[in-house]
Image (spheres, rainbow, N blue to C red):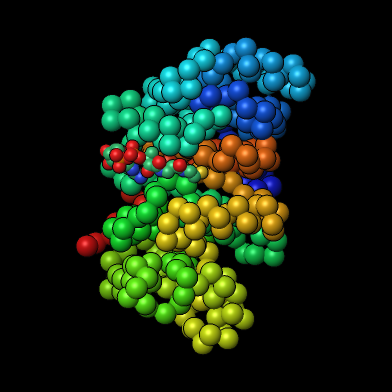
Length: 313
Ligand code: COD
């Protein structure tokens, strides 16, 4: 699967899913919800400030197709309400609206009423790049702030699962650092080398290839890899980029969006239901693409625990 248009095509015959939006008073979120309804991709339950939602609908002449609005002006309570709707089965997908990401994540991490599983939750951005075979997956640029080796291994499992769901049988995973050589002063290079050793020792159970450290250029450009004499099946042709920390990932993805103008979608993996997590400044198009990808994963969700596989320490 190479494009968000193909994802939309693939879910054409799926049952219409319901998206619970946390703090829905946001123009690009409402535009995405309206588009999703018009294209028969998803219905919505909008939890948030009903007056603010209504004002946006009128000012921008939006047709929300009869979406249910649950009035809750307090953002934290609205987040809890949207999470509860998914937890209780009134909605299939959770989506972040106009609130801070950490507040949204804390609501879904709630021990009793949240959407946690035994797995680590992590975020994966999908990037559509013309001419590429398959999406490019970038993780974790939005949830895990400074993952240690154990968390990085779990982040890889989640991303491999996601890449497999979207058609890559044996995803090539590049663990990124600032350089491609192991440097004891750079923890990211040590972690990358350890993750590669774990792969060599068959400590990852799902089908994938994990290598590193890579600098960004030699992970995505065969010319750069060749110039630096870096071989192997991942060099220059990575499907999954594992960033060392949230700052690096966030800047990388924002460069792709703002400088390279590439379409992206963002989802959480490891929760009890698909979760759409995009940045507040992302376009309605990115939010619609993310809803479509979330719908695409709903059928796989029940098998998630089995499919994600294991890391053996
Ligand atoms: N997966 C599963 N459980 C988790 C995870 C995770 N990734 N993170 C925390 N938990 C659990 C812990 O086991 C614990 O039980 C509970 O949640 C609280 O854990 P803390 O105290 O470590 O976490 P918090 O509440 O301080 O922070 C968790 C956040 C996810 C809110 C935090 O990591 C965060 O702010 N992430 C960055 C969000 C952000 O600002 N993104 C911006 C980019 S757009």
